[in-house]
Amino acid sequence: MGCVYSVPGEEAAVSRSSPARDSSFIEKMKKTGRNIVVFYGSQTGTAEEFANRLSKDAHRYGLRGMAADPEEYDLSDLSRLSEIDKSLAVFCMATYGEGDPTDNAQDFYDWLQEADADLSGLRFAVFGLGNKTYEHFNAMGKYVDKRLEELGAQRIFELGLGDDDGNLEEDFITWREQFWPAVCEHFGVEATGEESSIRQYELVVHTDVNMNKVYTGEMGRLKSYENQKPPFDAKNPFLAVVTENRKLNEGGERHLMHLELDISNSKIRYESGDHVAVYPANDASLVNQFGEILGTDLDTVMSLNNLDEESNKKHPFPCPTSYRTALTYYLDITNPPRTNVLYELAQYATDTGEQEQLRKMASSTAEGKALYLSWVVEARRNILAILQDMPSLHPPIDHLCELLPRLQARYYSIASSSKVHPNSIHICAVTVEYETKTGRLNKGVATNWLKNKVPNENGRNSLVPMYVRKSQFRLPFKPSTPVIMIGPGTGIAPFIGFIQERAWLKEQGKEVGETVLYYGCRREQEDYLYRQELARFKQEGVLTQLNVAFSRDQAEKVYVQHLIKKNKEHIWKLVNDGNAHIYVCGDARNMARDVQNTFYEIVAEYGNMNQSQAVDYVKKLMTKGRYSLDVWS
Image 1 (cartoon, helix red, strand yellow):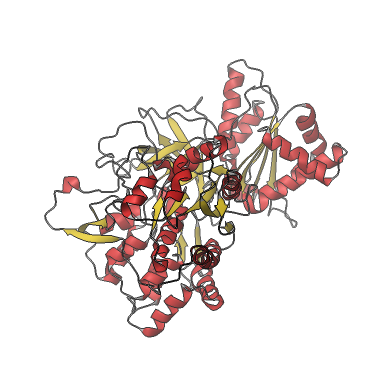
Image 2: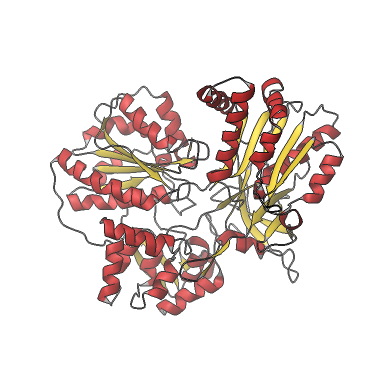
């Protein structure tokens, strides 16, 4: 859909106090009587959520846990954890992009690589969050698990590998239900039988509040949208004006669109291949339904304050704010909720059958897991659908807001070159819309929100909160190096930027190598994106080859990999003799894998290699940065 990287089901800015970077988690644990620390490497909040759940579990066993962001502490203190009785470090680590650490775990990863610390007194366990459709499945979790052991630490439970392409929630629950008995055995403790639902935040309703002190959607600093100051990043997005929003396709049921965001005077720099992150808003009609079902005035101004005064995370989202703002800008109300949310909500169902069903779905029994999978996950029931289908369920809205995960920024591959468009960032995306098994129409939050961003509507600017995230997806350093670009559907996005840049380089009098594009869509007359632009680039000789697969214009399906096979000899020459760089953008599950298998075949045939040598050859291209992926699932 043009939204880059489905990072394992997986942090957006949370209002935190900013502790000194070198603060010691050991001192904090001693001061607050904790013996279990759960670190999370999280890009979109899921690993953080899992870490919170594990740290809350600890009290059932007479232990005390705390979740911790590795970015906020000095991890070399791990060697001192044995100073605390019955101590344990757990790591919930998501893998991002092509086997990379998440942004908040980068320093920890760098330290692990360079450290020669003696961690012999440290007891640990790791749960990794990954996605099987990606080349480097759970690379970060595997690395942390292996490296801690190399440094002398003692693993007390096996590495858990969560797969977001399957059922990440179930993988986590299955691991967790075996993890805690292992902890009990190791420390000689027993479950206390306390299954109580403990609130993490307390509600404070503000009746006479100064509205200038109330958050209205900002991600970090209060009033940051009215008084914009660079640098712009995840905690301080720039409000870009939408200058263009046009439909790209000529027919078909889908809506494919091209948007242009004005970044003049923002000091934002980007390169072709980078990603733009946008913070969307939930549909107002969905938000209003919460008010109706729960009988709440959504304009009530409130704060949710952490009951643990030692926590760095004072609120689950910027506070004070209104319920309406929280449900619109801060909370994810459209994804199926995880089992811990169902467990906590069960107490508010007055009908015993509904209460039992919620508890069962949150349990770790085979029957409960199957029910959760069919009734919630496969039926794509979001929290609103659950409230509608369980009429006796009336949770207090503040508890619901405490439980729901944060609404995440969405990443798109930038469809422009900063050499040609220094003050503008272009997005190519397709609106997501589908009918669920319950007959409801589910709409993608970000793409439908973007679709409605009409430039200069009624004399008012349409604004998009955004920032740029650097990527490794880069044109070759030497313009004379040939490039082979493969990007069907909205996977064309970064290549529009690449081709614009190669055209600009040519205009500068540089020698530009062969520029080959493999693009695919359903039908030539329906969804051939950027048709005029590509034809012009071909005519001007910037695009040396334009190969387009129309999958549904004939009886048998034709995809990009079929066209690559047709030109296999030319491809081998470019790669083996011409040192060409290969780029693949788009769907990770099928397309990227099929394309990679096609390259294995070509390399085996023309390089006179067997299968494993061919695979090795392509993997070496990847290591050298000559085979790059920008894929999502």
